[in-house]
Amino acid sequence: MANSTGPGSTGNVLAAICSFFLPGLGQLVQGRLFMAIIHFALACVLWLFFLGFLKHVLSALDTAIYRR
Image 1 (spheres, rainbow, N blue to C red):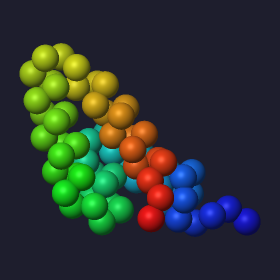
Image 2: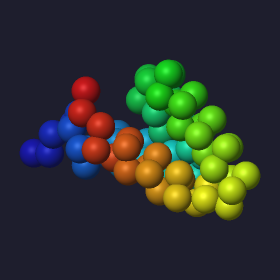
Image 3: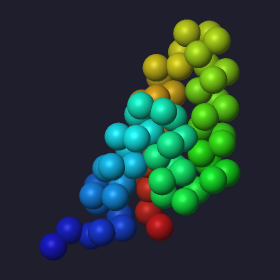
């Protein structure tokens, strides 16, 4: 049976998908308000330099490997 709270769990995969579409949303789904704000703010700044797509991927990766 898969670990329900570790990396690759259903909750983390769903959060990673949310975070891919809107950086910080996955962290918010996981209950990590501070990290959600950081990821969203950093994505906004990076989009100014046309690097926002990179932050989308990194934000999704952060939520996918999160361990409670």
